[in-house]
Every structure is written in C-alpha cells, then in structure tokens.
Image (cartoon, rainbow, N blue to C red; front, side, top):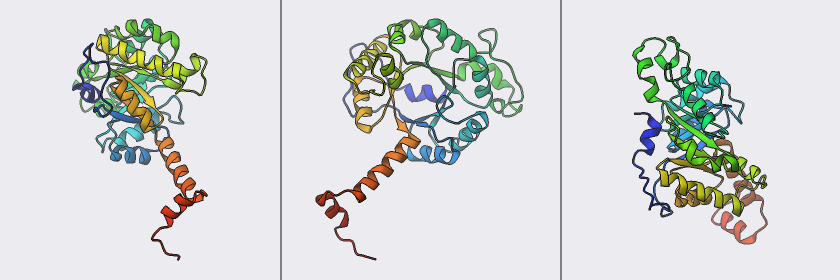
Length: 279
C-alpha cells in the first residue's frame, strides 16, 4: 500500500465524528522549503510523519527533489512532492524521479482534479508517459513496477480559494483523489484577508470544510503556523496537519532564543542567569 495512504488508514470518517478531542492522534507533517537534503533528513529524524517537498514556493528543481527523496529514504517520514502546477509534464518528471505521493496546488473544480489524476496514471487510464529507465523502476531493474504503478500513487489536491471550497464535494468525488488539502494562506487572500490566515472568517471556512469532508468520508488536511493552531486544526476534524516549514521552525526557534537573551524583562533575565557563572 502507498505509504501516505497507510498513514491515513487508521482514521475513521463517521458523519457523527466531526470534532476530535485536542490530543487525538493524527499524522503531523511539515514543509521542506530549504531545498537542503541534509535539513530534510534532519526533519525526518525529528519524527514528523510526513513532509512536503515543495517545488511551488521554494528553489527546488528536479535534481534537488531527487536528492531530498534520497535523504529522506533513510527516515520514517513519508515524502510528498508538491508539483509547481497542474501540468502533466511536472507530474511525469517527479513520478519518474521516485515520488509516490504527489500534491497539486490550486485545484478549482472537478475537471482540474480529473486532469491531475490522469497525469498520475499510465494509459489507458491516464496520460503519464512511460519510461523504463527511471529511478521509479530502480533504473530499469524492476520493470514490473510499471504495471503496478497506478495503484501505488497517492494524489492530494489543494483547495485554496473560496470558490474551490464551494465545489469541495464534487472535487472529492473524482475517482483517484486520495485526500484534500486546504491552503489557509491562499484561502485567506481569496476571502479578502491577505496575510491573515487566522482571521475568524478563514477559520470558520476551514472548520466548515473539515466537517463537509468528514461527512463524505474524504481525508482532509491543512497547514498551521504554530503548534497551538495545529492542535486547533486537529480538534476541528482535519485528518492530517502540517506544522510550518523547516525554515519557519528554524527562524522561529532562533528568534525566540535571541529574544530571551536580548530582552529586558528582569524576571526572564534572572531565570536565564540563575546558577550560571561568568567565563
């Protein structure tokens, strides 16, 4: 079974179970924005369930994607490759490079969802080009993988606008869509709240989307900037939740450490200095 589907497999999707308790276990992930194989490997060692190798909003090109996939292969973290756009050539290249779970941004309707599915399937089910000499076939040493490839690919489509959310059910109904993902930043912009992903209207739309997805039994995920927001998303019924990005986690930790040492709060300075000795 596809590794990402295995992460979602234990989850149930009962209409009555719209809200979870805040501590309930769901797969937690993050975004790889650094384009660094070593950082990606470290993120995998940190214990995330999944991580998105991002080709849309990072400097990553195909050789970098291969290097990150190779680095993450030594960890238990499931890699998801986000293609830059819903273009068959982009799908073909990352699938040949060894990606088995793909995320496609900004899907607006069922027709675009079907286009994405077709790009992940070999003919006659789709339009994926056939290559016998690829990393996906272990460089031609495992040709039988081609016949089994379609069943081993998972596809996540991103709904990132208010318009897309009105079509959630019809997009989810497309055969071959394994999961939905709501991008809160683009959703907020489409709702007139650019840069305000935590706006009350945006959070209400996210909660409604989670409830509707669970009502039809389709796994749905989202991204949160902080652990608190991630816990709220989990409690709202999202089936998999992303916590920031590798760069975001690094910068936030650095800023907190600097703020603690550069701050003027006497209580904080005292707590940091207690028990220390000068060089």
